[in-house]
Structures are given as C-alpha cells and as structure tokens.
Amino acid sequence: RCTTQFVLASQYGREKNNDLMLIKLAHDAPSNWVVQRIAPAPAPSQDGSSFSAANYPELEIIGFGDTDDDENKYSAGLLSRLRLQAISPVSAATFLTMTLSNLAGTCSGDSGAAVIATGAASGGVVGVLSSNSVPCTGSKGLFVSPAAFRDFIRRGAKDLDLPSPV
Image (cartoon, rainbow, N blue to C red; front, side):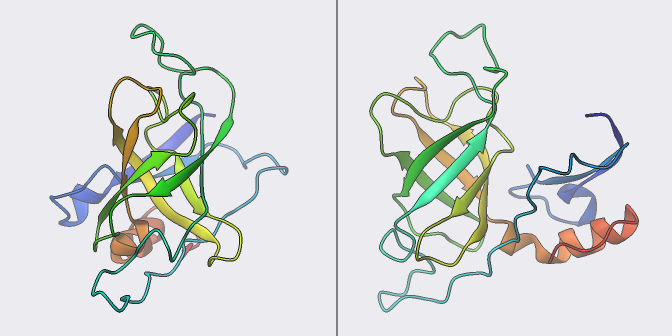
C-alpha cells in the first residue's frame, strides 16, 4: 500500500519510545481489513503494576515478519498470527512478551505489528512491536503501548485529516 503522509510521535514532543507513527494510505484500505480499537490503559492491579500476565492471559500478534532465523530475510511476505504472553507489567509506555511456542517468535519484519488482547480480556490493540530479541525462535518482544500515546494519536490523526481512532 502506498502512503501519502505520515507523522512521528517525536514530532509531537514524545522523545522516548517514539517508534510510533501514523500513516495515511493513498487509497482506502481493503474492505476485508478489520479495524481494531486501541484498548484502554489497564487499571492498576493490587500489586501496584498497571498490567500483568494474569490480567491479559491471551495476546496475539499479527505481522509480516520472517519465519526463520535467516539474517538476510526481513519478511515472510505472509500475514501471520502468533500467541504471546506478557512477562513484564505494562508500564505507562512499554512491556515485554514471550511466545507461547518454542518453535516460533517475533522476528525481522514484525516491527510495527499490533498485539491484540483476545479472549475474555478486554479486546483491542494493547501494543505495537518495537523490537525483539534474537534468534527469532522463542524470542521476546518489546512493545510500545498506544494507550500511553493517546494525545499523539489524536493530534496526529487530526493533522493527517483522519478520524481519531481513540
């Protein structure tokens, strides 16, 4: 898909965790694409963390990343899904995950992919992949929480003449 414009979180005073960007597509997205809402920021748990694996036991990443540990490949060219588990509390801006399969993991080409809370947990996008460990198989992923960037998302969408997703 071709883009016509984009804005970076760093353009709106967000110097840390600024892997987040909004893009405006040149054409409408395909009708079979499903819009996912941004999940609200989780309420603090009794232990003081803002998010724990027990609160969101089911997470799923959807991305185009590589499917093996070949350093010369950056995309499998296929949209894939992978179940993940949070292994650190989601702070105001970032959290870590691990894969639920020892045979797979987040990989090159998955950066920018959304992680979605599924099942009984509150649905919606809870994170965007910023980076992952290597090798890809069994990797851990570092996610940026879009809920922590609501101000940027609202302002950026307005500047791109797009409806606000939050």
